[in-house]
Image (cartoon, rainbow, N blue to C red; front, side, top):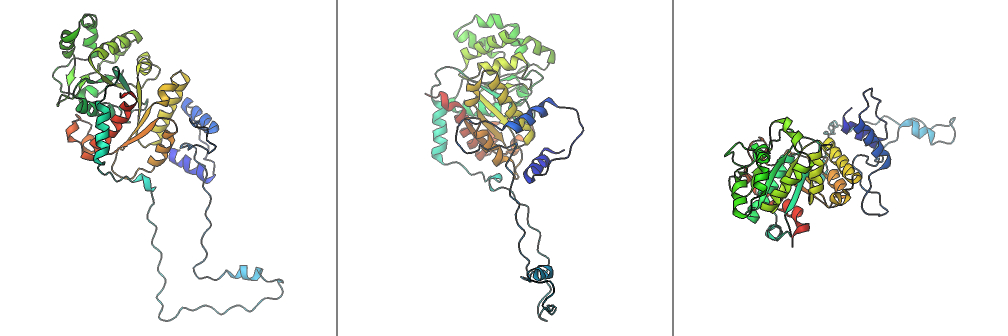
Length: 393
């Protein structure tokens, strides 16, 4: 059964038909959450917005008849005795000059007002403020983890564009790391492929590089990194061999993170889809800022919501409370679920930022920051500054 049909049947008060299918543990968790309701951070008496279990809507009463006359049965019922009835009225005839009534046109499909976004350029003062935030000192190197176990939610795109935006403002010291265990594509979509080295080659020389300092460290590490075409950020590409994931244990991931902190101020990490992997969990515990990436689809939003519950249950409630939800618009048309998703994630994370559809990102090839529309770049200015702002001094 379609998830959207299920939501419609819930709103109308009609229980969905039973389905015979294997029990899905995520579905059991979903039903449990529907029974308990989502929890919010504020103890206000109002019921928090709940996207996956919206309140039922009242059934509207049909409008009265256009002719203004009640049906004969209703007129007879209004008489005190059934044995005394008034004579039937003469049949109504239309005037000779009156044209026959035409069928009313079908109403156009309606969409929520907030679902259609008119992207306008931000006021100059908003852009100036975002730039000022990103140029401030951060106290120490900061790790931004981009996460959602669901695939196809613009996680890699968000990692690249966050690094490109912050790097274009700060000028240097920004890196995007493809930490996907199963053949991530960040290395293909970001940076110039001046060589084929990946994190696998870096680990083979990690002990030697860790013992270097200053310019010698920068020069040696640079041989394992790729660079954006405009030089705004560096890229540590992931390994395409899936067997290599077994080598990224907790100790190794921490060593790589410590090395990158010695050479970069902002590290944007594109995480994988396996929340049970030691690699994924180590990055989450090392992150200063969690960025939840999603698109306006129920399956993507449910997976992100489930991930937040998992992080809360494993002692990372502070990371969740300070998280930023990034909703990427995958198409230029109406997005009916966008208003509800925005309301829901505002109750779960520190802020929600929506970035528009851009045709330059649709083909899935190399991402060039300069090819984006001005409205897209300004939206990313706001998004990146929202991620950095808690640490700006």
